Image (cartoon, rainbow, N blue to C red):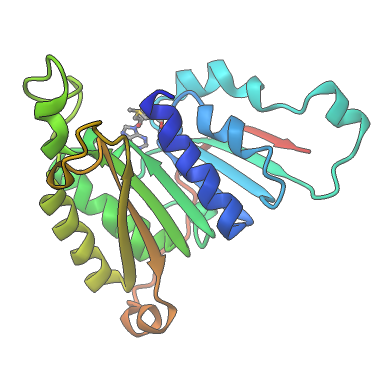
Amino acid sequence: PPLYKQRHDFVIQFVKDHKPKKVVDLGCGDLKLLRKLRFHREIQLLAGVDTNSSVITKKKHSLSPLPTEYLQPPVHPLTVELYHGSVTKREPRIKGYDLATCIELVEHLHPAEVEKFAEVLFGYMAPSAAVISTPNADYNPLLPGCSGFRHLDHKFEWTQAEFCSWALEICRSYGYRVEFTGVGRHPSDEESVGFCSQIGVFYKDTSRCSMLLRNEAYEDVPVYSLLYKVEY
Ligand code: SAM
């Protein structure tokens, strides 16, 4: 399967294993992942956020219930909410979720925004778990015709060592632990090259988190705009 599907399948498998009730997809784009997630009925609240409001507006109806779902009320209720907003802003309505996914988003942020994003995601939203995927620069020499970045809009692409040190710093600062994995292995399977897309799975370390809790009084003022909401 294409790489984007492998990344989304990784998230689906994570959801099957961990059964989160509240899931937010950061940088949800054309809603492909949300459309898959909505069939996992352990999820009761499914949110999506993107700075590109036109793609959300164009695709939002693909998340409405199917006619058969209207006829047959679901056993578990599900609410879907789509927001226009940036992951660098503190939004109270997506705080304290069980899972935040961030698939191929971080490399689109400028370095100063990456820092802000880490603070917002891990210091403010503080989900129980977060799945972050990003291109692995160590793999690029194996990609045919890839000189420079994989995409024009990428602000950087991290080597495995760079991703690792960023992730470990987050763990130290915000009280998380991280496991590294990925999707897309080269047939020659050179261990050192790693996966085409590298993935960090972060888990909140509840004991350390409470110790690190900053006593900053955040003003819980909504900053995102709600573009779509549907209740199943
Ligand atoms: N996550 C989707 C996927 O797996 O197919 C889309 C990935 S796409 C490469 C990156 C997405 O991040 C785009 O939809 C873009 O609009 C969004 N994005 C970029 N900067 C953002 C920001 N600061 N806050 C929220 N979304 C952002």
